[in-house]
Length: 317
Length: 317
Image 1 (tube, rainbow over the protein chains, first blue to last red):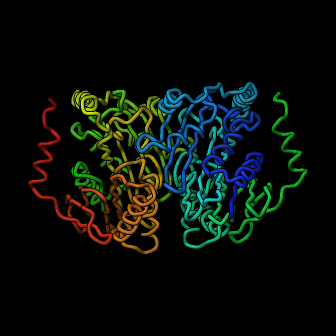
Image 2: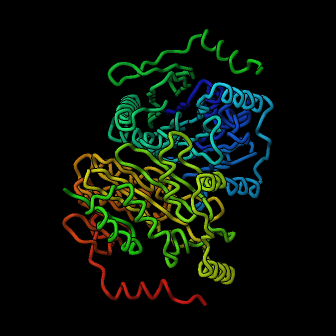
Image 3: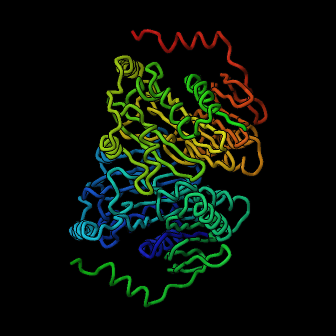
């Protein structure tokens, strides 16, 4: 029996640890993925997902999330949803519907209210303070306002061989109202087929949707590539193509796991992630683009972790 | 020098005729695609796109549109936008932005206002009447309300070898507020690479986004498949897979054109489309699923056209 879980960014680690504990006890991939993403959504110091996430240019926190079931291809997604505690749970619930399974804006929020999902003012004082400070910086220094777009994306495999993927994000910091990135978009932000494997993305959504990389990675795994080879092939060839054709490639990072619990990642920027399976205990790694379309992956250092902890909790002046 | 245009449904024919005229006079693919889609958006008797489109379950007409440039992979998209005359033009304008290029709901509408796009009450008396009648039918007969989702999707190739794709739709009739289909979603509703070709979809968006068929068709053409072979391979294998794994496949139809102006379509439902290129004059065809993963394509009959004309203009009781 094999199982496994992989998720984007150091912020997902506690969720991955818990996911592996649940998978070992025969938890279902759907429950485990939802639970993993909720852990990240609930934590106030992660400023790009759920509670504590950063608001848009008007000061409103709009969130995107998606859920996909690799057995049936059921997809549920929300974009621009507001004041709901766990967008991932709304997305998962929507995946049960044959119609209207992707809802945006007020329609998404309305659905979550009617269905009884927990309401919560998701904008923390801290996030509001960061937003105010940023507004000032932009005014003073004539800065490009867009920065930070760390989606949590997770792929899990359970002991029955079922796989699911989930994503959740408050999107690009200082985004315009109603801006949607790749996170709720099938093929770009996520894709999973339990007979093959799954993938999820984080990075500049506007560029990720130009490449459909999550779909492409799953497809390559379906042709027999390992998750690592599939990630390397898809991500670096697209990075090169986009650089040539569009002039520049934004930051993006992809994670993948196949239905044997093997995993891979590729990235064009420094990227942390957490992964574990029935053989390997959960661990945080740091990845960078290597030479010749490969990825350099190293265990995270204690120094990095301490600096991170300090950074995310630093007082906002 | 070769050029060509292909678009979904009989409703696109007048736009395709004009597109070919413009392409012959060296019009750019971007202008031609936008113009083609606008022709469909502007015509009041097409009830699934733009002016005259059918409203959602609350009686509000919400529209989706997207535009992609195959030279640069630039994408612009809107979903759930209201009261703007030409959603495709808003999408095209958004494709020029590096950030915030996919906008939904009020944020999308707000953008169109700020950018000075023409406002228009897009809900015609006729569409409102059809909506009222449908509400009554649903009440009386306990019907599944969802029906009709005919997106206009178009791919064009200009004499310089540039390709673009555009889509526009008022979405599933009686959809819930904020429901989004495949039309604004890259890879599912559309995809184009000028070095290969382009594809666009129409049908049940909830199922189309399970398969990323537009991306897959372009990818297969990139491996050397003809547009027809690429459509057949992608669409029918996905139809079979979805039927097996999800239990049922909704209606969907895909069109494609490569960078030589060759074209193809595949569909699991009766499907009309219009196509022409530098060698073939614009013509309407009717396609059906054939045997062994092939597509049966016939020129449209005069009888069919007359019945269609009568149907779309029939009085609403």
